[in-house]
Length: 286
Ligand SMILES: Cc1cc2nc3c(=O)[nH]c(=O)nc-3n(C[C@H](O)[C@H](O)[C@H](O)COP(=O)(O)O)c2cc1C
Image 1 (cartoon, rainbow, N blue to C red):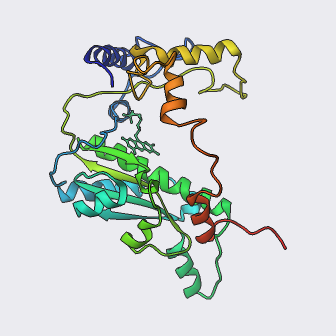
Image 2: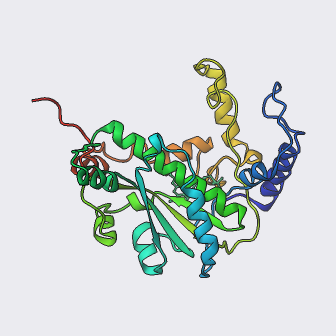
Image 3: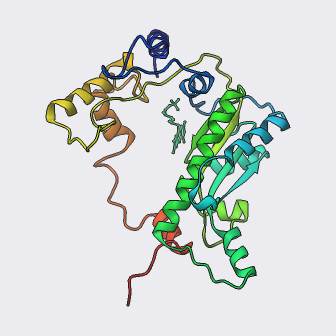
């Protein structure tokens, strides 16, 4: 975890960047931040430490309505949002509890029913259909995050819904067996920790490419390793990587966090099994 000093320094850097004094790119001349940009720059995740306090209903309604404003392919809104206020259910679904949890599902059920009711057979069961619906779903979720922050409400996006036995979601939430998959859960609430801790972000080569994709050089790759090691930049999930015997943060990240080289190679993971069962994976022609 980051120390108060590194948090302070990062916040100072954020404030400088916000005021335009610390430019991420020498050519860039960012416009002065308006309220929307300030809200986006203040985004930070609350990692599970939410108060047991309800959200005002009007705020939740505003967040939901804002979420629906996100762009979506063909204005199809191929998603659905399940609002959970029952605390034990929140925990069972995503492993976290807040004031409420919104489960964002890629979902064609409604569209299929509309098609059927008009006499059409609509089959969005392709990987393209899945990617499009997932994109629509995630944009709606992130829009909710921004709306919540603008109202002073904290949040956590979590893929805890995919940890453990994913099939529990279909049982707990009565999800349709086909063409509906939970993509992300959004925990909304109020953090117990008042300190506004902003994590850093990697910038520059390898992240933003201009005009064409730029293949990283060895020196640029090493520079990225160095940036992750620089606690002032606060890019890491954990500040104690050196204490656990690692040369670089990324050693900790790949070895200890991602378990690279430790986990046996996955056969067919539960996500692929579920995508097949939900009808999103086309069978090869016989
Ligand atoms: C797809 C996704 C899954 C995540 N899952 C978790 C999670 O299960 N637990 C958690 O504490 N944070 C989770 N996060 C939050 C990230 O750790 C966090 O966004 C990242 O460390 C950057 O920090 P920030 O959001 O405070 O800037 C998730 C974020 C995303 C987008």
